[in-house]
Structures are given as structure tokens and as C-alpha cells.
Length: 131
Image (tube, rainbow, N blue to C red; front, side, top):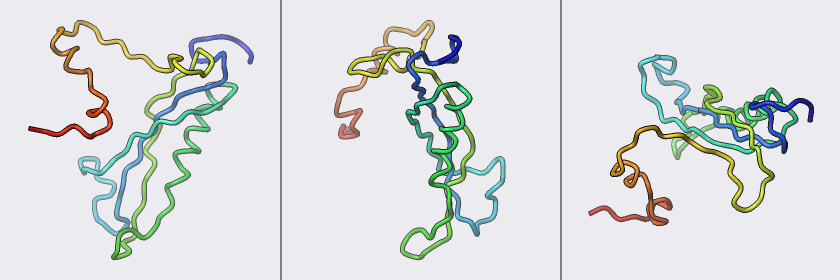
């Protein structure tokens, strides 16, 4: 790798997130800025020699599943539309068990809020039962 900076991974790995939205191709309002859509933010791991190459690789991954297809039992023409990349972060440590790949700073959180953010294994898995 060439130069070292906060945007360059010294180990050649990046974590990138991208946004896609689901549309029915024959529906009206597919480009309505106030319209509401089912959307996914997917996060992928890519190996790259630079931030720009990582960006291109995340975008290429995002576009892999954006071809129109017939959905459901009725065969309705649908498509996932790539909206863009929402995050791209270099990984600074070699990938191994327990390495830190992402972090988020939370300023001035009340203890109760901080504790409410912690989840059990069942909650994270989606197995938690509501009362």
C-alpha cells in the first residue's frame, strides 16, 4: 500500500454500506421524493488497495442484485434500485477473532439510555418475545 491516512486501510480491508429500495416497476410514484419504500441498508466487507477502489467494489456489490425480476406468485415486475453508498470505513487491524472493525461515538448519553441500548442474544437474534 502507498501512503497512510485515515481513509486508507493498512490491512487492505474496508466495510461499506449501501442503500437499495424495492419498487414495483409498473407502479406510479416510483420517483416521488415523498414516497415511502421498503429499503435495505446492506453492509459488506471488501478488499481493496485504496478508498476509491473500495468505493467502486461496494457499488459493484450493490448493483449485483438490481436487475428486474418477476416477484410473488403473480409475477409482478419488481426491482431493487441502488440509491447509493451510505458509509465506507477502512479497517485498521488485521482481520481475526475479536478485531475492531467499526466504532460509534455516543456523546452525553444518560446511563438509562446507554443501558437500554444493550441487547441480549435472543433480542439480537430476533427471538425475544414481547409481553
